[in-house]
Length: 141
Image (cartoon, rainbow, N blue to C red; front, side, top):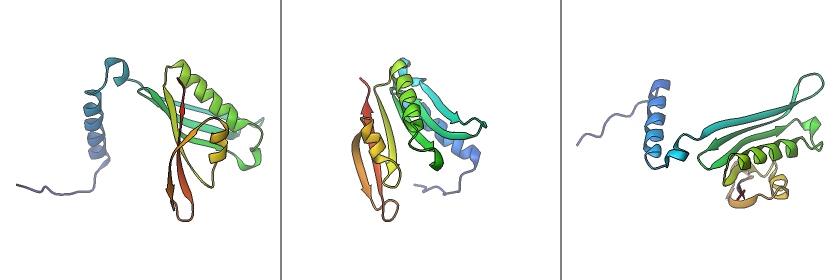
């Protein structure tokens, strides 16, 4: 039996592998869920038109994954993070999502998410070295 050859993937190779997994996953989903994928990205700009806060998230199947929530260091404690998070939660509910998941580091904002009702699911110690990596979930239903 051949072991095959391992090669670095080109962008085309990576797209093929991604497509194969998407097709496999779709075969296990209802028609209602299999095509549900949408990026929900928003930002807040100051009077000069500069972005001072933003959120990047992905609605996939029956949940929303919050990928990035960022607020400029000089603009923190003005409610921008909460405004962005609440808008993403509103849209997720409107679109029928069951929950939101996210991850954050100990040097980022775990207490912020707890304050907003997110429940800690897992903690990875020493990731990165000397810190913790947290995984949170918030049920919407």
